[in-house]
Length: 103
Image 1: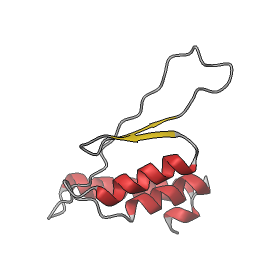
Image 2 (image 1 turned 180 degrees about the vertical axis):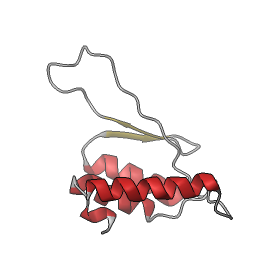
Image 3 (image 1 turned 120 degrees about the vertical axis):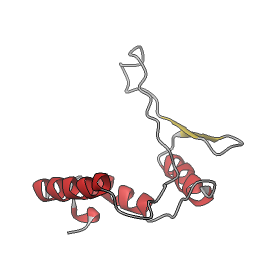
Image 4 (image 1 turned 45 degrees about the horizontal axis):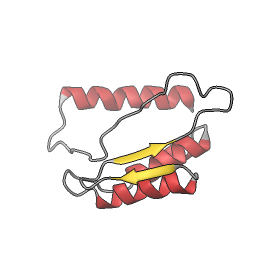
């Protein structure tokens, strides 16, 4: 089973596409372009600042414009570990359990 096989299919396919992009710290050019294109393809407002922060804005659902805004934040870079640690091993095990439960 791959990520693309999980449901909802669109979510996991986009997640797999994002994770296929190498993006070490200070080398995020490709992932910035990916995120910019992702937002633009959805017709959303996209801005990239001079240091590579990507801001994608989605308007509120009609009728809910007066509700508080929701902000999601994440790093675009990925820091790889040279050696597995007990922590990373436990994450892999948890992912396997979740994947099995979802699949």
